[in-house]
Amino acid sequence: MSNAGRSISSHTGAWRAGILSELSPEELEHLAATADSRTWQKNELVFPEGNQPRGVFLLLKGKIKIFATGSEGKPQIIHIARPVELIGFRAMFSGENYRVSAATLEECEIAFIARTEFVKLMDANKDLRDTVIRELAKELGERALYVTKMAQRSVRERLAMSLLELEKVYVNEPINLSREDLANYVGTATESLIRLLRELREEGVIQVQARKLVVLNRKRLEALAG
Amino acid sequence: MSNAGRSISSHTGAWRAGILSELSPEELEHLAATADSRTWQKNELVFPEGNQPRGVFLLLKGKIKIFATGSEGKPQIIHIARPVELIGFRAMFSGENYRVSAATLEECEIAFIARTEFVKLMDANKDLRDTVIRELAKELGERALYVTKMAQRSVRERLAMSLLELEKVYVNEPINLSREDLANYVGTATESLIRLLRELREEGVIQVQARKLVVLNRKRLEALAG
DNA sequence: CGCCTATTTGACTCGTCTCAAATAATGTGG
DNA sequence: CCACATTATTTGAGACGAGTCAAATAGGCG
Image (tube, rainbow over all chains, first blue to last red):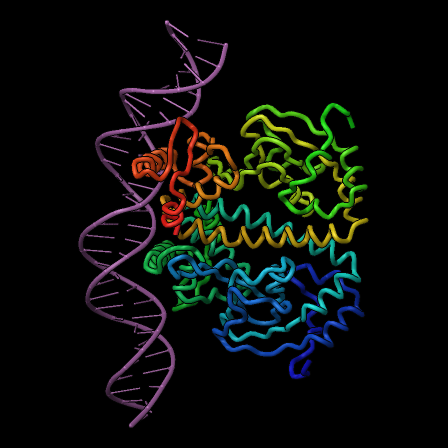
């Protein structure tokens, strides 16, 4: 492995996906030595649907969208990842190819952890395995319920929900997504999204400055989301 | 444990959820000895959302619906389980309470495997752990994509999709669900579902006999599902 | 046979999508 | 730094899918 990137060890205080929290300092050190991070440009494809995973990506800085392509080519954004989050671990564990694509939304710093390294750690660390199982199961629970939320709510309600979720992704900074990406996250047409955004702005629920959205009235949004 | 039920050992040829396929004959024998099955009536609640899981259910005969309750009380059927399928393992692995409910759709035979038994097996059997991880990851992939399918398709398309899925659940027998359950599975109003069913019947795509639906033209359904 | 529930049909409304076009913003080459 | 090209955002008009409410019909079960 090259040594071009910066070590990941300085990030070990704030794992979001709890999966790596079970590693011992030595293991983490080893991981840091083999997994270098590098900078990615905005709008780069991290991995495309259909490819075979060779490891997992650890997002250290920036945001990444995870999206699937619908039957008519319309992308659906399934998740927006923020630091520090492990990307692409599902496909690696399942032994399948990627079923979704990932692309950077802004300039990012991403570390790559080779499959062999991860497997080695898994074999050596029982707690890590238990954590992986627990996290996968939790995530699966979220996903299963997500269907309910999407299928039963109006676009207006889904937008409110989505804004609340995005607030957690964009901590201490305005939500910054293109109208199209936001529409694909909510699961609606861009035009519909824009109209609803205007209504929310006129009601004083959000502040809009070009692409940047700030939630002003969270209570109201929560009420709208149901 | 009581010995009222029938042993599960006679079912070990056709595990659907591959999770238990990694067990050795001895382990399976032990499981069979501690986990007895019993018969459940139609429309019994296997477990309700919010409860703490004490183990997993193994569906040996019959069908079970897994459903979540939406914000306005409207249930959304997330999955319909058929033999031989493990029910409720997600909550057990995640350490959370059930986030969904399960109810029998017809007379069922269900074995219960206590949490302690399952944990014992997991600790002793590395291949079983790997299988659990792999299966959870696979299922997670399915679920993540499901959102895309639901959000982007019309009710007509979702109905076509659903019928194709249900065909795999009801093997060699007609799909047998109330209109309401079917509507809650597709994610639509009962009246809308009925209208679309009539259209499909008139187009010769399905055969309808009271509650019983038979797919006559799978190709056409696949085309409609997109 | 009759009650109760499930299913079906009809009429109407409303949300959301699509298509078209205008405007704003962003990037590019001279 | 300007003029132009290109893309992103916004607004408008119209059509249609799908939900709701109400009522009729059919089925199932005691």
